[in-house]
Length: 498
Ligand code: SF4
Image (tube, rainbow, N blue to C red):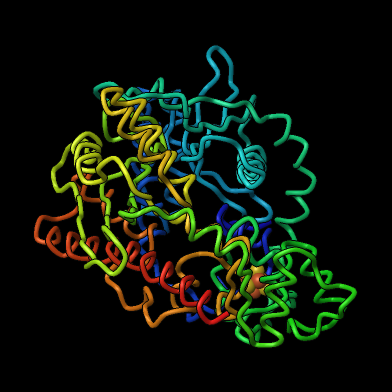
């Protein structure tokens, strides 16, 4: 019988993905990565969702002990139960034998009984496999701590919600009964929690092969350590999931050079591998010629930056709706004409969509190609803008009809450089063909742009930091469209070289 808290819920989930990751977490703190901006943004969203979830279940009491004070949190919870409270936020319990412990977001008494419901709150819009594992551990803990549990629920975001004034928690969330799944998992949890207890007691790190588990359900925090001997472009870039594990086991190597001919994949991946093995650029002249033939001057190179908050910020928007707040537009009126640059960046604490739409339609005139990288994204944004502002629908649809997707030549491998390492993302294509790259920028990717702008839009970014944000966003978004200009030049030059 243990009386010490030993295995938290997050440690259980980490160990379920890989026992070695759990062992590193406990015994090799030096390997833990720093919290990056994206992770911090996730924490902030989780906190805000938690506050709204408590408003959904009004009238509860909260266990407020510090995160490390498990024993104190358990005592507070037991006192609240004794005092007759029906709703307890952050209720905490511990399994008396294996020492697993957890905090449930909401512990709710079933009216007129001595039973309770467990309610775990997540910021997703649906239920994932690891959510079941999460609540299964919670049930294991609370049940063995002596709580009679009637049902287990996931509380997730209802993506049909549309904001109209103050956020309405009753409409923002929906409850899903996952009791059956949780009950069915209990013998597995019993076994795994016991095994992970032994893992934590080990002096030596456990053995674990790298492979699909390192990215599923989450990218493991210790990949930089465990994968340091894996080439940047390896078998894992060619095959996905368990298939990659099979191939590595079969050839006993991560190196693409060692994949035998009979195991080589078909389609675009075969082009990637042959370019890598022969260190050569692949050019499909015929298709590139057709692509270039579609471009009509004036050329408009367009890129949006968007935010997609879980809790909608603006009226008329829903959870995770993509809201454009910035665009960059490079314009070339005719061949060899000077390149012009325009930008829109919404710097007010208000809905950016209408002023952005007006500026876009004004700048794009009514003829010439609108070149984007990944058309479905910009086209989808325009369709949503047209729905929200029907008076601009004609202008937006006209822009969509003129769109040409620069991703296609690279995704279809009409032009491929081995330095792309199997990716058609502009982050790989640009440095492969030009001397431009996204390295060392204040904002290095769309996720960072979105996260930092969201902090501003929610009023969380201190005023002295606004100017730096505007500069970083401008520099980042401008490079996205300049990159497209350069890549069209690269395609033209590839045709000349052929
Ligand atoms: S990187 Fe892979 S092998 Fe290493 S600890 Fe993480 S999941 Fe385990």
